[in-house]
Length: 439
Image (tube, rainbow, N blue to C red; front, side, top):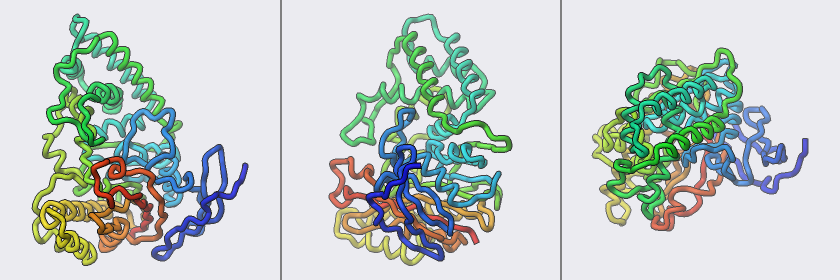
Protein backbone atom coordinates (compact mmCIF):
# COMPACT_ATOMS: atom_id res chain seq x y z
CA UNK A 1 0.00 0.00 0.00
CA UNK A 2 1.33 3.36 -1.01
CA UNK A 3 1.33 6.00 1.72
CA UNK A 4 1.59 9.76 1.41
CA UNK A 5 1.18 12.59 3.90
CA UNK A 6 -2.06 14.43 3.11
CA UNK A 7 -1.59 18.07 2.20
CA UNK A 8 -4.41 19.10 4.45
CA UNK A 9 -3.29 17.25 7.57
CA UNK A 10 -4.01 20.31 9.66
CA UNK A 11 -7.74 20.14 8.97
CA UNK A 12 -9.52 20.70 12.23
CA UNK A 13 -11.86 18.08 13.62
CA UNK A 14 -14.35 19.20 16.20
CA UNK A 15 -14.30 17.54 19.61
CA UNK A 16 -17.74 17.10 21.10
CA UNK A 17 -19.35 15.13 23.88
CA UNK A 18 -17.43 12.36 25.57
CA UNK A 19 -15.54 11.17 22.47
CA UNK A 20 -12.99 12.99 20.37
CA UNK A 21 -12.11 12.60 16.72
CA UNK A 22 -8.40 12.95 16.05
CA UNK A 23 -6.60 12.99 12.70
CA UNK A 24 -3.79 10.46 12.53
CA UNK A 25 -2.25 10.64 9.04
CA UNK A 26 -3.02 10.81 5.35
CA UNK A 27 -2.60 8.16 2.68
CA UNK A 28 -3.37 7.35 -0.94
CA UNK A 29 -5.06 4.02 -1.59
CA UNK A 30 -6.22 2.84 -5.02
CA UNK A 31 -5.98 6.42 -6.27
CA UNK A 32 -8.48 7.70 -3.69
CA UNK A 33 -7.31 10.22 -1.11
CA UNK A 34 -8.21 9.17 2.42
CA UNK A 35 -7.46 10.24 5.97
CA UNK A 36 -7.02 8.05 8.99
CA UNK A 37 -8.94 9.15 12.04
CA UNK A 38 -9.31 7.74 15.50
CA UNK A 39 -12.96 7.31 16.42
CA UNK A 40 -13.89 5.74 19.75
CA UNK A 41 -10.37 4.31 19.87
CA UNK A 42 -10.78 2.63 16.47
CA UNK A 43 -8.76 3.62 13.41
CA UNK A 44 -11.06 4.20 10.44
CA UNK A 45 -10.17 5.34 6.90
CA UNK A 46 -12.43 8.22 5.90
CA UNK A 47 -12.88 8.70 2.13
CA UNK A 48 -12.25 12.32 1.25
CA UNK A 49 -10.35 14.43 -1.23
CA UNK A 50 -8.83 17.33 0.65
CA UNK A 51 -11.84 19.27 1.93
CA UNK A 52 -14.41 17.30 -0.06
CA UNK A 53 -17.97 17.39 1.20
CA UNK A 54 -19.36 14.21 2.71
CA UNK A 55 -22.35 14.62 0.42
CA UNK A 56 -20.83 15.47 -2.94
CA UNK A 57 -18.19 13.28 -4.60
CA UNK A 58 -15.19 15.15 -5.99
CA UNK A 59 -16.04 13.90 -9.46
CA UNK A 60 -18.99 12.23 -11.12
CA UNK A 61 -18.77 8.45 -11.15
CA UNK A 62 -18.65 6.82 -14.58
CA UNK A 63 -21.50 4.50 -13.65
CA UNK A 64 -23.66 7.13 -11.98
CA UNK A 65 -27.15 6.69 -13.39
CA UNK A 66 -28.95 9.41 -11.45
CA UNK A 67 -27.36 12.61 -10.16
CA UNK A 68 -29.06 13.32 -6.83
CA UNK A 69 -28.00 16.58 -5.20
CA UNK A 70 -28.73 15.50 -1.65
CA UNK A 71 -26.94 12.15 -1.77
CA UNK A 72 -23.66 11.32 -0.06
CA UNK A 73 -21.05 9.06 -1.73
CA UNK A 74 -21.27 5.31 -1.25
CA UNK A 75 -17.75 5.26 0.20
CA UNK A 76 -18.74 7.72 2.91
CA UNK A 77 -21.80 5.66 3.81
CA UNK A 78 -19.74 2.46 4.10
CA UNK A 79 -17.18 4.21 6.30
CA UNK A 80 -19.85 5.73 8.58
CA UNK A 81 -21.58 2.37 9.05
CA UNK A 82 -18.29 0.69 9.97
CA UNK A 83 -17.41 3.56 12.32
CA UNK A 84 -20.64 2.95 14.26
CA UNK A 85 -19.63 -0.67 14.97
CA UNK A 86 -23.13 -2.03 14.37
CA UNK A 87 -23.36 -5.71 15.30
CA UNK A 88 -23.01 -8.23 12.44
CA UNK A 89 -26.43 -8.94 10.99
CA UNK A 90 -27.85 -5.76 12.50
CA UNK A 91 -30.48 -3.56 10.87
CA UNK A 92 -30.12 0.10 9.94
CA UNK A 93 -32.88 2.62 9.26
CA UNK A 94 -32.73 5.66 6.97
CA UNK A 95 -35.84 7.88 7.27
CA UNK A 96 -34.69 10.14 4.39
CA UNK A 97 -33.66 7.36 2.05
CA UNK A 98 -33.26 9.47 -1.09
CA UNK A 99 -31.52 7.58 -3.88
CA UNK A 100 -30.74 4.64 -1.60
CA UNK A 101 -27.05 5.11 -0.78
CA UNK A 102 -27.44 3.98 2.84
CA UNK A 103 -29.30 0.85 1.73
CA UNK A 104 -26.67 0.09 -0.93
CA UNK A 105 -23.85 0.52 1.58
CA UNK A 106 -25.62 -1.76 4.07
CA UNK A 107 -26.01 -4.45 1.43
CA UNK A 108 -22.32 -4.26 0.56
CA UNK A 109 -21.12 -4.78 4.14
CA UNK A 110 -23.73 -7.31 5.28
CA UNK A 111 -26.25 -5.20 7.19
CA UNK A 112 -30.00 -5.20 6.72
CA UNK A 113 -31.66 -1.86 6.03
CA UNK A 114 -35.10 -0.31 6.10
CA UNK A 115 -35.35 2.87 4.07
CA UNK A 116 -38.21 5.36 4.04
CA UNK A 117 -38.87 8.36 1.86
CA UNK A 118 -41.99 10.47 1.64
CA UNK A 119 -41.36 11.22 -2.03
CA UNK A 120 -42.50 8.38 -4.34
CA UNK A 121 -39.92 9.21 -7.04
CA UNK A 122 -37.12 8.55 -4.56
CA UNK A 123 -38.77 5.34 -3.35
CA UNK A 124 -38.56 3.91 -6.87
CA UNK A 125 -34.98 5.07 -7.35
CA UNK A 126 -33.93 3.69 -3.98
CA UNK A 127 -35.44 0.29 -4.73
CA UNK A 128 -33.68 0.24 -8.09
CA UNK A 129 -30.35 0.98 -6.44
CA UNK A 130 -30.57 -2.23 -4.40
CA UNK A 131 -32.55 -4.44 -6.80
CA UNK A 132 -31.27 -7.95 -7.46
CA UNK A 133 -30.25 -9.38 -10.86
CA UNK A 134 -33.54 -11.30 -10.78
CA UNK A 135 -35.42 -8.02 -10.34
CA UNK A 136 -33.66 -6.56 -13.37
CA UNK A 137 -34.41 -9.65 -15.44
CA UNK A 138 -38.09 -9.38 -14.51
CA UNK A 139 -38.04 -5.63 -15.29
CA UNK A 140 -36.73 -6.45 -18.78
CA UNK A 141 -39.55 -8.96 -19.22
CA UNK A 142 -42.03 -6.36 -17.96
CA UNK A 143 -40.84 -3.81 -20.53
CA UNK A 144 -41.19 -6.44 -23.24
CA UNK A 145 -44.76 -7.20 -22.15
CA UNK A 146 -45.63 -3.48 -22.13
CA UNK A 147 -44.20 -3.00 -25.62
CA UNK A 148 -46.44 -5.81 -26.89
CA UNK A 149 -49.45 -3.75 -25.78
CA UNK A 150 -48.37 -0.56 -27.58
CA UNK A 151 -50.62 0.72 -30.39
CA UNK A 152 -49.48 -0.08 -33.94
CA UNK A 153 -48.74 3.57 -34.70
CA UNK A 154 -45.16 4.66 -35.35
CA UNK A 155 -45.45 7.31 -32.65
CA UNK A 156 -46.89 7.32 -29.15
CA UNK A 157 -46.86 9.47 -26.01
CA UNK A 158 -46.23 8.71 -22.36
CA UNK A 159 -49.96 8.45 -21.69
CA UNK A 160 -50.10 5.51 -24.08
CA UNK A 161 -47.02 3.99 -22.46
CA UNK A 162 -48.57 4.35 -19.01
CA UNK A 163 -51.90 2.90 -20.16
CA UNK A 164 -50.17 -0.21 -21.50
CA UNK A 165 -48.07 -0.49 -18.36
CA UNK A 166 -51.09 -0.34 -16.05
CA UNK A 167 -52.66 -3.32 -17.79
CA UNK A 168 -49.98 -5.59 -16.37
CA UNK A 169 -50.41 -6.48 -12.67
CA UNK A 170 -47.51 -5.73 -10.33
CA UNK A 171 -46.08 -8.99 -8.99
CA UNK A 172 -42.60 -7.76 -8.08
CA UNK A 173 -42.36 -4.25 -6.59
CA UNK A 174 -38.62 -4.00 -7.15
CA UNK A 175 -38.92 -4.95 -10.84
CA UNK A 176 -41.78 -2.46 -11.11
CA UNK A 177 -39.55 0.28 -9.65
CA UNK A 178 -36.62 -0.65 -11.90
CA UNK A 179 -38.70 -0.45 -15.08
CA UNK A 180 -40.10 2.96 -14.15
CA UNK A 181 -36.82 4.41 -12.83
CA UNK A 182 -35.07 3.56 -16.09
CA UNK A 183 -37.23 6.23 -17.75
CA UNK A 184 -36.39 9.05 -15.34
CA UNK A 185 -33.32 10.37 -17.24
CA UNK A 186 -35.33 10.11 -20.46
CA UNK A 187 -38.16 12.35 -19.23
CA UNK A 188 -35.71 14.85 -17.72
CA UNK A 189 -34.18 15.26 -21.15
CA UNK A 190 -37.64 15.64 -22.70
CA UNK A 191 -38.45 18.53 -20.36
CA UNK A 192 -35.05 20.19 -20.47
CA UNK A 193 -36.56 23.01 -22.56
CA UNK A 194 -38.88 23.78 -19.64
CA UNK A 195 -36.05 24.73 -17.27
CA UNK A 196 -35.84 28.24 -15.81
CA UNK A 197 -32.90 30.37 -14.68
CA UNK A 198 -33.29 28.76 -11.28
CA UNK A 199 -31.34 25.48 -11.70
CA UNK A 200 -33.84 23.58 -9.52
CA UNK A 201 -37.06 24.80 -11.11
CA UNK A 202 -39.17 24.01 -14.16
CA UNK A 203 -41.56 26.40 -15.88
CA UNK A 204 -45.11 26.64 -14.59
CA UNK A 205 -47.34 24.36 -16.64
CA UNK A 206 -44.50 22.03 -17.66
CA UNK A 207 -46.02 18.76 -18.86
CA UNK A 208 -45.17 15.51 -20.58
CA UNK A 209 -48.59 15.41 -22.22
CA UNK A 210 -48.77 15.72 -25.99
CA UNK A 211 -45.10 14.87 -26.61
CA UNK A 212 -45.03 12.57 -29.64
CA UNK A 213 -42.30 9.97 -29.39
CA UNK A 214 -40.90 7.73 -32.10
CA UNK A 215 -42.00 4.32 -30.85
CA UNK A 216 -38.96 2.30 -31.96
CA UNK A 217 -36.49 4.91 -30.67
CA UNK A 218 -38.36 5.12 -27.36
CA UNK A 219 -38.27 1.35 -26.84
CA UNK A 220 -34.57 1.25 -27.71
CA UNK A 221 -33.82 4.07 -25.27
CA UNK A 222 -35.87 2.45 -22.51
CA UNK A 223 -33.94 -0.81 -22.81
CA UNK A 224 -30.62 1.00 -23.05
CA UNK A 225 -31.36 3.00 -19.91
CA UNK A 226 -32.31 -0.22 -18.12
CA UNK A 227 -28.79 -1.44 -18.86
CA UNK A 228 -27.30 1.77 -17.49
CA UNK A 229 -29.44 1.45 -14.38
CA UNK A 230 -28.21 -2.12 -13.83
CA UNK A 231 -24.61 -0.86 -13.85
CA UNK A 232 -25.58 1.72 -11.22
CA UNK A 233 -26.65 -1.11 -8.94
CA UNK A 234 -23.65 -1.44 -6.66
CA UNK A 235 -24.74 -3.55 -3.73
CA UNK A 236 -22.24 -6.33 -4.44
CA UNK A 237 -23.13 -9.99 -4.01
CA UNK A 238 -26.31 -10.87 -2.15
CA UNK A 239 -25.58 -11.86 1.46
CA UNK A 240 -27.68 -14.52 3.14
CA UNK A 241 -29.88 -13.11 5.88
CA UNK A 242 -29.53 -9.50 4.72
CA UNK A 243 -32.90 -7.87 4.06
CA UNK A 244 -33.10 -4.54 2.24
CA UNK A 245 -36.50 -2.88 1.85
CA UNK A 246 -37.55 0.63 0.88
CA UNK A 247 -41.05 2.02 1.29
CA UNK A 248 -42.84 5.33 1.27
CA UNK A 249 -43.03 6.81 4.75
CA UNK A 250 -43.13 10.08 6.65
CA UNK A 251 -40.13 10.62 8.95
CA UNK A 252 -42.34 12.53 11.41
CA UNK A 253 -44.64 9.56 11.93
CA UNK A 254 -44.18 5.86 12.61
CA UNK A 255 -40.96 4.33 11.28
CA UNK A 256 -41.71 0.86 12.57
CA UNK A 257 -41.83 -0.96 15.87
CA UNK A 258 -40.20 0.42 19.00
CA UNK A 259 -36.56 -0.63 19.42
CA UNK A 260 -36.53 -2.19 15.93
CA UNK A 261 -33.17 -0.93 14.63
CA UNK A 262 -29.52 -1.20 15.65
CA UNK A 263 -28.38 1.95 13.89
CA UNK A 264 -29.29 4.91 11.71
CA UNK A 265 -27.44 6.59 8.88
CA UNK A 266 -29.26 9.46 7.25
CA UNK A 267 -29.24 13.08 6.16
CA UNK A 268 -32.33 15.28 6.46
CA UNK A 269 -33.08 17.79 3.69
CA UNK A 270 -30.96 20.87 4.17
CA UNK A 271 -32.16 24.36 5.04
CA UNK A 272 -31.84 25.60 1.46
CA UNK A 273 -35.55 26.05 0.63
CA UNK A 274 -34.94 23.63 -2.23
CA UNK A 275 -38.27 22.31 -3.50
CA UNK A 276 -37.41 18.66 -4.21
CA UNK A 277 -40.75 18.06 -5.91
CA UNK A 278 -40.23 20.95 -8.32
CA UNK A 279 -36.58 19.96 -8.84
CA UNK A 280 -37.67 16.47 -9.96
CA UNK A 281 -40.90 17.49 -11.67
CA UNK A 282 -40.27 15.49 -14.89
CA UNK A 283 -39.91 12.27 -12.91
CA UNK A 284 -43.11 12.90 -10.95
CA UNK A 285 -45.08 13.76 -14.09
CA UNK A 286 -43.89 10.56 -15.73
CA UNK A 287 -44.59 8.47 -12.63
CA UNK A 288 -48.16 9.75 -12.63
CA UNK A 289 -48.67 7.98 -15.97
CA UNK A 290 -47.72 4.64 -14.43
CA UNK A 291 -49.34 4.79 -11.00
CA UNK A 292 -51.34 7.18 -8.81
CA UNK A 293 -49.25 9.84 -7.08
CA UNK A 294 -50.18 12.05 -4.11
CA UNK A 295 -51.70 15.48 -4.59
CA UNK A 296 -48.94 17.69 -5.97
CA UNK A 297 -49.31 20.64 -3.60
CA UNK A 298 -49.94 18.46 -0.56
CA UNK A 299 -46.82 16.44 -1.40
CA UNK A 300 -44.72 19.60 -1.73
CA UNK A 301 -45.97 20.91 1.60
CA UNK A 302 -45.32 17.62 3.41
CA UNK A 303 -41.61 17.53 2.53
CA UNK A 304 -39.17 18.52 5.27
CA UNK A 305 -37.63 21.83 4.23
CA UNK A 306 -40.39 22.68 1.79
CA UNK A 307 -40.54 26.39 0.84
CA UNK A 308 -44.32 26.17 1.26
CA UNK A 309 -45.14 27.30 4.78
CA UNK A 310 -48.07 27.21 7.15
CA UNK A 311 -48.88 28.72 10.51
CA UNK A 312 -47.56 26.51 13.29
CA UNK A 313 -49.61 26.04 16.49
CA UNK A 314 -48.03 27.99 19.35
CA UNK A 315 -47.58 24.80 21.35
CA UNK A 316 -45.50 23.29 18.54
CA UNK A 317 -42.76 25.91 18.74
CA UNK A 318 -43.02 26.03 22.53
CA UNK A 319 -41.68 22.46 22.64
CA UNK A 320 -38.48 23.55 20.88
CA UNK A 321 -35.29 23.92 22.98
CA UNK A 322 -34.52 27.42 24.27
CA UNK A 323 -31.56 27.95 21.92
CA UNK A 324 -33.71 27.11 18.88
CA UNK A 325 -36.47 29.49 20.01
CA UNK A 326 -33.82 32.19 20.48
CA UNK A 327 -32.66 31.60 16.92
CA UNK A 328 -36.24 31.94 15.65
CA UNK A 329 -36.59 35.21 17.57
CA UNK A 330 -33.42 36.51 15.90
CA UNK A 331 -34.86 35.70 12.48
CA UNK A 332 -38.20 37.34 13.28
CA UNK A 333 -36.47 40.53 14.47
CA UNK A 334 -34.31 40.87 11.38
CA UNK A 335 -35.13 44.11 9.51
CA UNK A 336 -35.40 42.39 6.11
CA UNK A 337 -38.79 42.10 4.46
CA UNK A 338 -40.94 39.14 5.57
CA UNK A 339 -38.50 38.15 8.33
CA UNK A 340 -41.28 38.04 10.92
CA UNK A 341 -43.74 36.45 8.51
CA UNK A 342 -42.73 34.02 5.74
CA UNK A 343 -39.15 33.36 6.84
CA UNK A 344 -40.03 32.89 10.49
CA UNK A 345 -42.74 30.42 9.43
CA UNK A 346 -40.32 28.58 7.14
CA UNK A 347 -37.66 28.06 9.79
CA UNK A 348 -40.21 27.29 12.51
CA UNK A 349 -41.85 24.63 10.33
CA UNK A 350 -38.46 23.06 9.55
CA UNK A 351 -37.39 22.88 13.19
CA UNK A 352 -40.74 21.55 14.42
CA UNK A 353 -40.85 18.88 11.70
CA UNK A 354 -37.21 17.95 12.32
CA UNK A 355 -37.93 17.62 16.04
CA UNK A 356 -40.86 15.30 15.32
CA UNK A 357 -38.67 13.24 12.99
CA UNK A 358 -35.90 12.85 15.58
CA UNK A 359 -38.49 11.83 18.19
CA UNK A 360 -39.84 9.18 15.82
CA UNK A 361 -36.33 8.04 14.93
CA UNK A 362 -35.22 7.66 18.54
CA UNK A 363 -38.30 5.60 19.33
CA UNK A 364 -37.38 2.89 16.80
CA UNK A 365 -33.67 2.82 17.70
CA UNK A 366 -32.63 0.23 20.26
CA UNK A 367 -31.04 1.27 23.55
CA UNK A 368 -27.31 1.44 22.88
CA UNK A 369 -27.98 1.83 19.15
CA UNK A 370 -25.78 4.27 17.26
CA UNK A 371 -26.41 6.77 14.52
CA UNK A 372 -24.80 9.17 12.09
CA UNK A 373 -26.72 12.20 10.83
CA UNK A 374 -25.17 14.42 8.15
CA UNK A 375 -26.20 18.09 8.16
CA UNK A 376 -25.11 21.32 6.49
CA UNK A 377 -24.79 24.76 8.04
CA UNK A 378 -27.07 27.49 6.76
CA UNK A 379 -27.86 31.14 7.29
CA UNK A 380 -30.57 33.74 7.11
CA UNK A 381 -28.96 36.87 5.72
CA UNK A 382 -25.97 37.38 8.07
CA UNK A 383 -27.48 35.18 10.82
CA UNK A 384 -25.59 31.90 11.00
CA UNK A 385 -27.71 28.80 11.50
CA UNK A 386 -25.59 26.07 13.02
CA UNK A 387 -27.79 23.15 12.04
CA UNK A 388 -25.42 20.67 13.71
CA UNK A 389 -25.99 22.37 17.07
CA UNK A 390 -29.73 22.52 16.39
CA UNK A 391 -29.91 18.77 15.69
CA UNK A 392 -27.91 17.97 18.81
CA UNK A 393 -30.22 20.09 20.98
CA UNK A 394 -33.35 18.61 19.38
CA UNK A 395 -32.16 15.00 19.75
CA UNK A 396 -30.85 15.07 23.32
CA UNK A 397 -34.23 15.30 25.16
CA UNK A 398 -35.24 12.00 23.52
CA UNK A 399 -32.13 10.17 24.72
CA UNK A 400 -30.02 10.47 21.57
CA UNK A 401 -26.65 11.45 23.03
CA UNK A 402 -24.12 13.24 20.87
CA UNK A 403 -20.78 11.39 20.76
CA UNK A 404 -18.62 13.16 18.17
CA UNK A 405 -18.60 15.37 15.09
CA UNK A 406 -16.58 15.24 11.91
CA UNK A 407 -16.55 18.51 9.98
CA UNK A 408 -16.35 18.84 6.20
CA UNK A 409 -16.24 21.81 3.89
CA UNK A 410 -18.86 21.64 1.15
CA UNK A 411 -17.68 22.65 -2.30
CA UNK A 412 -21.16 23.26 -3.58
CA UNK A 413 -24.68 24.00 -2.43
CA UNK A 414 -27.85 24.94 -4.26
CA UNK A 415 -27.48 28.47 -2.89
CA UNK A 416 -24.01 28.82 -4.38
CA UNK A 417 -25.15 27.88 -7.88
CA UNK A 418 -28.14 30.22 -7.80
CA UNK A 419 -26.93 33.61 -9.03
CA UNK A 420 -29.91 35.34 -7.38
CA UNK A 421 -29.17 34.02 -3.90
CA UNK A 422 -28.19 36.44 -1.11
CA UNK A 423 -24.43 37.10 -0.82
CA UNK A 424 -24.24 35.41 2.59
CA UNK A 425 -26.17 32.39 1.30
CA UNK A 426 -23.63 31.83 -1.46
CA UNK A 427 -20.68 31.48 0.90
CA UNK A 428 -19.15 27.98 1.34
CA UNK A 429 -21.14 25.76 3.68
CA UNK A 430 -19.82 23.59 6.44
CA UNK A 431 -21.11 20.05 6.72
CA UNK A 432 -21.00 17.83 9.77
CA UNK A 433 -21.33 14.11 10.32
CA UNK A 434 -22.85 13.87 13.78
CA UNK A 435 -22.43 10.60 15.66
CA UNK A 436 -24.97 9.66 18.34
CA UNK A 437 -25.74 6.84 20.72
CA UNK A 438 -29.10 6.16 22.32
CA UNK A 439 -29.16 5.92 26.08
